[in-house]
Length: 93
Image (tube, rainbow, N blue to C red; front, top):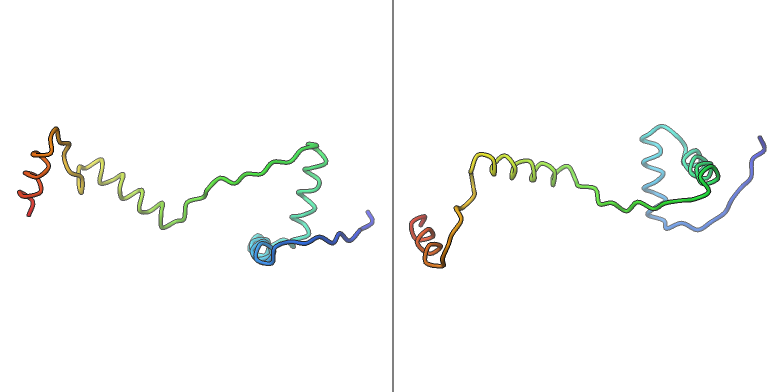
């Protein structure tokens, strides 16, 4: 298979991050780009997935909140009136 060179502009930070990730995965960035181009040709379509990805720190925080919710820890009771809220606050102080 003969090779061709494609020149296109890419945001410098995107290129740096993509190169780092490809290196972590043990492949050159050109392999990633070739795989995406082949997928584009096979499917005759492309999709963009901009789903937010939670950081490990945020996932840990959410797991802690879920544990607290299940055990009733760090959660206030429900209130039916403003007076009940102030009574709870004053009792907690």
